[in-house]
Length: 556
Image (tube, rainbow, N blue to C red; front, side, top):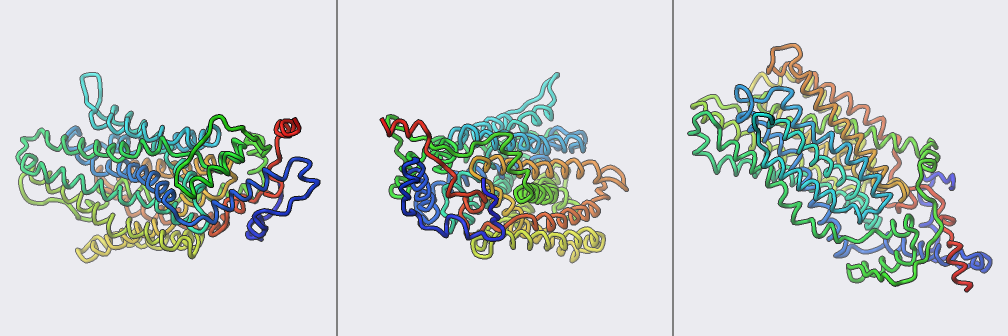
């Protein structure tokens, strides 16, 4: 391995050299040159490829998964209110019940990110892709048909199914990120990965639209329910169950997506097959694998626990892993603390609370307005933020966007927290609060929520790329768990149960974590317009050798 410092001279590795160097006779006799040059040429083809239909397919197949993930994750913010009316004591969930159904998927996602991230590096991206979507579909359907009985609590059943669903969602993060990055050319890699991740915004919006459609469709029945909330029960089951539809549509394409050439070259060490794959998908958008073709294995660095410790034991690599992991952890403290509790925040500032009508009419009005509020938040903040990142990430780079986002979020959360009482005291102040809340959503997505997904999918060597992304994503999910538990346990401190008296201080805590994200971003190098091999910081000239078995075969 080389001690090449890619931070000091990011352009000085293989991209500065010709794609095919002149063959050195002595090296050729040793059997090194042919496969090394074939790998180098294949990588250059990928890195300099024009945007083509296969890129579109990769983005669409990965993006539908993230649409499904976001739908399933954030639908619970509205569904929890409905579930509280139907099954909660006094028409609402207890803090522990609300926490259980909201945090259970995060626990599953945490485990899924670590497990699938590691498995994708060990057994392959293709072999794991689609399995996680199957788990999501099963978990989503399980929630939609969950019931209760004398020995079964509905909350326990929902927690179990949301945990299972979370396992699949966790697997989607490293797999989709790495597959997209390894197929993308360096000129458009940031936009391709951002387009995949931006599907979350549409998933969030879709959940709110389905919620308002379901509630409006049962308007008359809900307003005339005699206290049993039967039709509210229909609403949350429809809302949750619809989440499996896009996943089912995308499943076939995930199961048939080809293995990435980089995995085939660097981990399976079959350079010849990978170079053929590159030529095929760049010209026809398809892959043809001949099972009878002779396999040429190269000798390349292999993943192992010892090698992982050696690689990331070096400060220049270890600080990058820590920087990515902490940035995602800090960001998700606020992102999920707000995203999964948007209904609470909207209600607390007086948006969506019904004050007139019968009890059943108030139920309808509250559910309708919570859904409308989530549509406003998605359209005003989430979706525009994602697409601003899409437009600029390959122009100004990942690191400036992440720095900017954390800095502005620190200021916004300080304003929301320290100015909470004044902002919520008047109708004009509440409008200002909503505007700042939307700005927080905007700069989370035109900022670290996008870049913390993109950078870990680029910055590690191929043999650890998915594992690296899984560790970083799991750190973020740990932040989501901390936020959810903290939100539930601290929100009433200083007041009676249900007062939400501690909400201003929670927003101030969010500001503190955004400030720590500024510091962790400084540890991460810029990856814009660099090849994945340059970013990985390893010597590419001597990365592979021809296997002794191949040399013996050639001699024969």
